[in-house]
Length: 77
Image 1 (tube, one colour):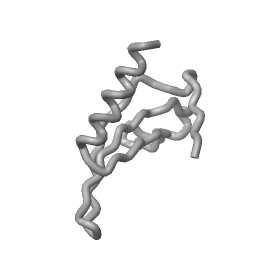
Image 2: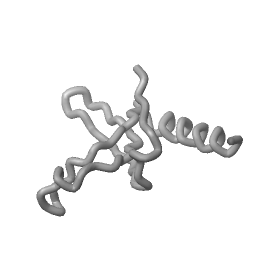
Image 3: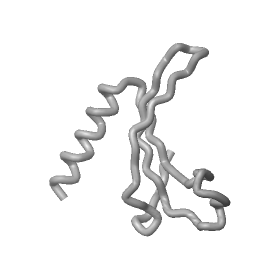
Image 4: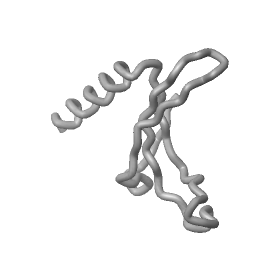
């Protein structure tokens, strides 16, 4: 799968998320990047249905390794 996101769509908001699945007992870790969205989509301040991309990892250590690698790669640009 390929996802193209252009810099005009990105914000400087991101977060690390954790999701525990009761059925399997597994916990997944994600890096979520929020994108710009039209104000018409938000009816109240509590209405947070913004567009975001989340990259999910099976373990926290894999998530950390991936993000470190991305940081190192960007340092070479």
